[in-house]
Amino acid sequence: MTLSIRQVGPCFAGEVTGIDLTKPLPSGVAQEIHDAMDEYAVLVFPNQNFTDETQIAFTEHLGQIEHSIGAGLRKPDEYRLSTHFADVSNLDKENKVYGREDRRRLFAIGNRLWHSDSSFKVVPAKYSLLHARAIPSKGGNTEFADMRTAYDALDHETKEHIDDMIAEHTQIHSRRSVGFEEFDEEERIRMAPVKQRLVRIHPSTGRKSLYLSSHAGRIDGVPVTEAMLLLKDLTEHATQREYVYSHKWRLHDLVIWDNRRTMHRARPFPENEPRDMRRTTVIGDGPTVEQQVA
Ligand SMILES: [Fe+2]
Image (cartoon, rainbow, N blue to C red; front, side, top):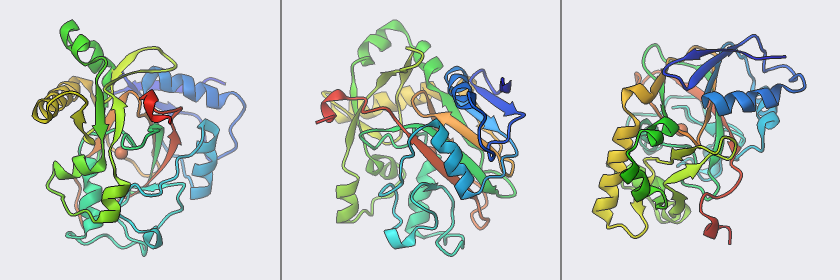
């Protein structure tokens, strides 16, 4: 079987039709999806009417699921979904839309900053699989930036300057950058910074990508202000419109992206409308900075 893929957006996203991912996968299809991910980095699968169980089952065909313990501000007794999911909704445990001032909402809308999922974890995410269960009447697009093309477009001098840099990532950096400062002691400990390479090599293609995320706020051996300005400059470069695909969600779309060579961000939508997006995540192969293994 061969997946039917047509390119959408500027050269790194594809739409895949002719397959129902809620059914048991025919043999060989998981490998076809991996190959297509290496080619496109973002794949859109329309009309996938997943339940939680079938989304989990499909995700497990692609790799080990990253559990979502300790990534946001929901306390364990406030989870709406099983820990197989990152709950990317604006809903509380009773499926009610968060109030405008709810700190869980204010933390969650930090996803409107460019980022790569779980870059704040020692072993960051490989793929994210986001499924649309309820969408707002307007807005709420997800935008993707191609970090491989962005790296290739840098001049030689900049590549040499940044190739071996190590950045420090924490959700505290990303939230502080939009004025969210209220972390309690437990959250500060849980969100301790981790180190990631600023340029990473994709294990399947051997190509280099910028590995940026709004969670990055420091670079080893570089003065803080200089590091923050460099990260801002690189992010501005990497998110020029010609490197960006904007996905307008339809109900039951599944979008898979490779966090190792893309960044993404959510766009605003009417805050009183439910947006129920459920993300399963395939864990990466290992740390990007070897010394963290110990
Ligand atoms: Fe995300």
